[in-house]
Image 1 (cartoon, rainbow, N blue to C red):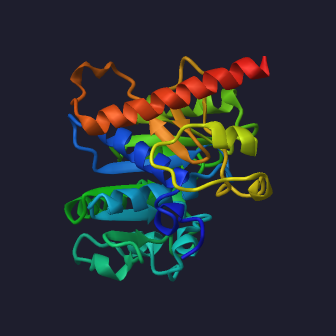
Image 2: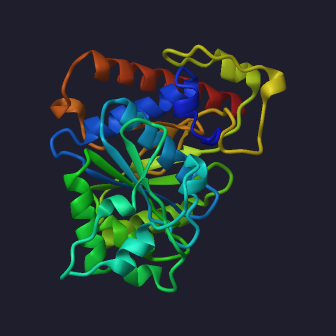
Length: 304
């Protein structure tokens, strides 16, 4: 298991806490309609969608859920590397082997991971026609089967800017999260992707902004609930999405607002909170979000 699985390797870290906050808010956003399938995508490669997908899946498993993580990026899947499993057979093999006349044993395509309750379906062999496989009856059948044997199915989809695969998947899942990168993703591209998802009938939970740099001093001054880790000047990194960096908000009135800490933070509800259940857990999550928003507002004032 690689160090990218921070939620598993260092569950008391600030990053792990933020992933748990992201998980909590996704659950509350879908409290009326049970969320069973979630697609994680991005606009372009290298924005951190696979990292977000894997750590989010870990936090759901840590909450006692039976989770199946599907690497739906059949062109360039890397979840098998993150979890240290064999790459095949996987999704492409299942879709190619599917037959309406014969039943297929799903266990042949799933890998148990070191995280209790979390199973991985790797991307499998690179097929010549990924889009055609995803739009097939086999993919629809697979999602239905996975829903029957798990509490939540998370799909790590391909970037939406390059191929149509992710747009196809948005119609099959309950909700979609778009991962973006600071100083890398263009807002016009993001708006176009959001519009395209909505045009094909997909639902968007929110947008995660990743890779936001922050100085070590400001990082230590920021507030995070339950953190037991420290971060000093000698530990600053800018080369990996797994490095500890600060959260930010994507400001675009046409895009559902979400926050993250290179690292996700939490998807804020698009609707009012009048239907949101009250209790210690949501109060804690809202308090964390309030603190982060205040911090970001101060950051913006300093920049001006």
